[in-house]
Image 1 (cartoon, rainbow, N blue to C red):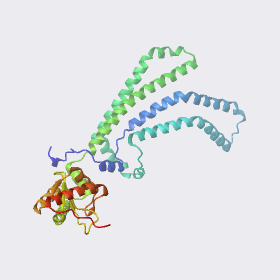
Image 2 (image 1 turned 45 degrees about the vertical axis):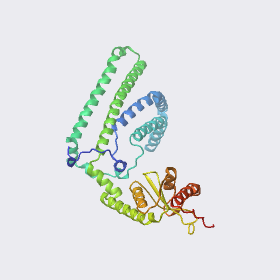
Image 3 (image 1 turned 90 degrees about the vertical axis):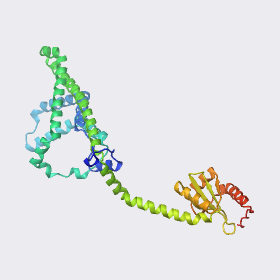
Length: 360
């Protein structure tokens, strides 16, 4: 597909991902949260449901036993109803806390901690019947409808399979005493809900995987989007290239002025070049007057050859001076001996005597 068609052939950058996240565009599956709540709710009821029922029965017995002494005034009835709700709410509180924690955890595990105040504000455009009809009749709406029908079919099939496996017990359940019949029906309901919850969890995980994949596809960028992002974050590439060209030219000009004044050029042997100047009458130590790598190193060597400046290959020394010493700065103490050796060699080539350093 041609580039003009907007093919998203580049992975999303970190900036684009953060921008999408700030706008609330994240991979999220509502079905996963619902499935987790259903499973956790069933397990919590299996664990604490008996205690809640016993507490409710105890409250009912107490109210019925004291029914003859209850006041029937409106204020009294309201006070007694509030007291009854408080007593019953104490037994429900652990279940509600666990369900709230499970719902929050299922959301955090999907999208992390994300606070978007603008999403809390009401959006009146969603109240438009025309916009709602467009969402329902869109391709995404049709896909959601198909997935909803598939989930309904799966839930029905799982529930039917659970009931079919216990069909003989269900048929003969009418022979059980009332208490055992109630416990049997509760057990059937819980087991059916548990298996349905597991089936919905599997479907929700598949849906979350699909939402993750679709989110990644939506975040992918075209070549034009990549260029625009680079321009916004770093500036216009043409301006950046022009600025680098000017900086390179300025560096070459500085090298052209400094290298002819150097006494020796230390190389590595082709990647790095460091020009050193030493005047014992004016300098306490040799000074790096120019250095460069790649093209700049070639330029320094060429200037050195043009001005008959010795070029000495000392790989460790060139690497040390290039990394540790800035231009127009003296060499470090640990390099005195190596640089002195190089300078002595250069003066020997020239048939001159090594100058004596000035007194400190």
